[in-house]
Length: 285
Image (cartoon, helix red, strand yellow):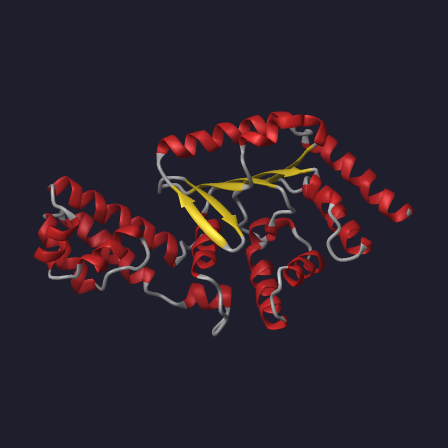
């Protein structure tokens, strides 16, 4: 899969930061020598933006980077500047929060996703369920249409011909008890969740209420993204405010929590049977 600009920027950022640190330069000193602003260099190293080629070359000269790495980073910088991926996924003129652009870009290039959610995760939402959720969040009709188009594009991770990411999902039982839209919308969503386990690269588990306090260790929903060859990270989001957590220690902690949640949850086959029964009960009402 072609790596989207956000993933490329993250790779460039990690290389630039590593080069500067190996050179023993502070952010301010490196920026001064390369004749760029400190704030610009900080944005490059945080992956918020990619440098222009001439700026990249100035930084490479300051850091004394080897020729092969210089050539690789120049190629990555040119690729990160392409607009085709962003336009095709988000649509021209579509207003999407920057954190969502960043997350979707990383999601699209991940080799594996581990998702724990108190709600039905976006990737598994039906169009009607997603529409009802967005309306309940107060989004206007145009935004809802745009977000649904984006969701359909994101779900290529599940249905696309080249969908190879391994996706493991643990959903809290409260998600299927909470009515979103009308009963028919909820029933369709639960049925879709039950069928999701038929996909070869996807496993869905329900964390039942009887699991007790197991969920408390998570403190809320999160997504762990494996981004080979880049380091993994964890994504947290609430009320349209997002946080990306990096660092081996922190990521390992979330992996351990997800493993415990998975062990406490129903296995995929039992999850599907359970969801079928819940969907049937909604039909019978």
